[in-house]
Image (cartoon, rainbow, N blue to C red; front, side):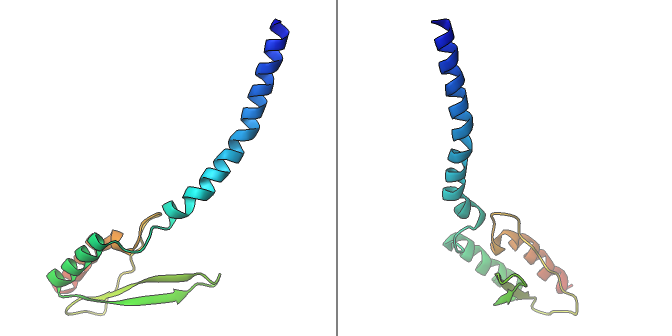
Length: 114
C-alpha cells in the first residue's frame, strides 16, 4: 500500500514538472505581448503631453525610422521654443511608451530656453 502511494506521488511530481513549462509558455504567450507592448497612448497621457507642450512652448512631430532588422521605431521629435544646437535622445523602459519620459522632456525643453 505504501509503495503504491509512493509511485503515485512520483508520477504526480513528474507530471507537474513536465506540465509547468507548458503552462508557463501558454500564459507567457497570452500575456507577454500586452505587457511588453503597451497599447497606444491613452487619453490621460495625451492630455499630459499637451499640457507639457503648452507649459514649455515646445512642439512635437511624429518621427519613425526602420531599424536594420526591419522593425519600425516610432517616436516624437520635440523642439524647444528657442532651440539651440544641442539635442538629447531619450529612451523609455521596457513595457512603457514615449510618454514615460515626459518629465525628462520637459526638463530638456526648459534647459534649452536658459
